[in-house]
Image (cartoon, rainbow, N blue to C red):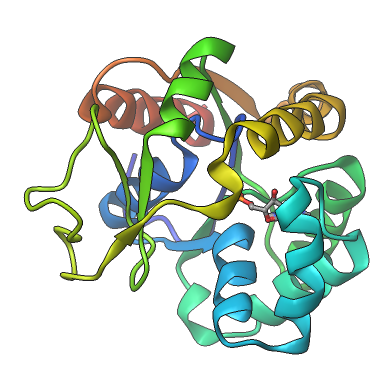
Length: 225
Ligand code: AMP
């Protein structure tokens, strides 16, 4: 695929901890796209103590979805910024059918569309292990794992030198709810996008490089084919 293809919009689907955030960053770098992660946008609002952040917190702490109208309005706002010109990798959005329909409508208004949806499949027990060891950079949101992908210097982000922390919602109880929420509300999008002819599935196990290669090949196949 020509990486200079314009307005490529990719959705990454997968359970929490399936590697969407890490792989989204890598895809963006390879394909010149912009990473839009609704979880990151909510956490940014939380840090800045905005009204949106305060509202989102009550849902995030429980591991359930922030209401659709709030989430969709936030994404709409994000898509107004000029940096999304070349296209977007959506991570954590859409998370249900209402959001999927809203995304298509928003992109259509901009003369664009979802070009490919990549479902990153990871076994349940691996998900729990990944989330319990996950570390995130406070500054740039880069994601690490204590065992599988440790930073070069403990507690410090390789990318920007920011401080690493464990997300409050990566505790066992909230993880359980997040996985249930995912299964009930987000997993049905796999079939939804399959029917739309946009879905391609990749195995999320293996090294980060292996998964990135699979993702690139999957996007390539979908966009070219
Ligand atoms: P994430 O960083 O994607 O794991 O998201 C963390 C939390 O933010 C989720 O458990 C939800 O509470 C909230 N969130 C993120 N994305 C969405 C979305 N698309 N719709 C509703 N809530 C979301």
